[in-house]
Length: 425
Image 1 (cartoon, rainbow, N blue to C red):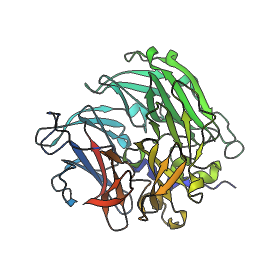
Image 2: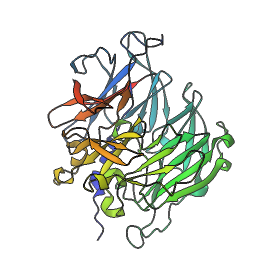
Image 3: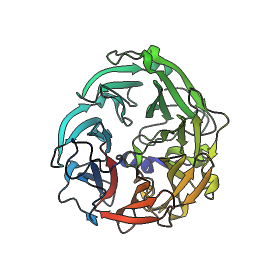
Image 4: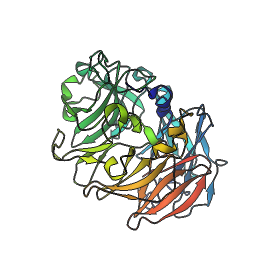
């Protein structure tokens, strides 16, 4: 019998997101005297009903022992959001109200809101992907189109129409006979060699997010054929590819800005198939795994498959925080720690432990024994041989500094609210 875990638990994944990375760069005169890192902290109410996000600049080489929000700017007072640094600005993706805001940093380190774009027509959209200074892409479930906008001027310019590939109404008989796709949505975008790869998720309804397919699906677009000012661009779509070895990929702005589609030093794309943020494994009967699209190819690599759960007692795994040289950080769940009486336990309770995985050698090493909210707080910064990892335990929130070679860790500073560090340039 199908278990419907999703109605409350998976709605909250839509409320569990944010941002990116950080450090000091003395060669860039545009960076403020306070440093070119930004610390975002998100304060969440005990019942997950309200959020408030604060931003402040800092210098990683000269940090305090604690960061409260007294001198920070409140950039979002009511709901969850994601921050993405690009070209010296911060783009706050407020997916809960379908908008993206551009924020700049002045010489004093203060954050100033510059412009905003509404994407209400897209609905609950994925994170934007910045191709260059004048072209960025973003998509959502309300219409099977990828919107194009100019991140410098913050003006919308066109679309990539994917409606010819629509699956809405298709009977998939998954997970039960007669089940069909009700909603389809881009969940993440990555670009390599002028090809855009759009991860798709097909599900039953916006309130439950239960999957209606049991495979990983990507739509491939030739950007050489895209006119940013056209409202069509349907001719730029070259194909749809699927792989039945893994469930769907795409971060949908989860973990405060994590990406589940990354590019390594060999120009290979790796994708995390994560079973609806580790919640639909019992539905798909597939483990969290990594698939690959090799450099120069537009199809899945049938010779590569990495079962992440097999190395950690078959426990659910979430995260693809890539540090380089084939290594990435992921959070491993302890299912026994879930509070079954609390539908938000997966996101609000510390039931995950951080591991370092190796894409090439297919190994896993635990970082330390501390449990954290790895599903909600997962965006890491990697800088100068160290990882800056967000930690939210039962008693405190802090940034953990990890030596990437020895994996020795230390508490760098504590915060008021769930922390994310990112670098402006």
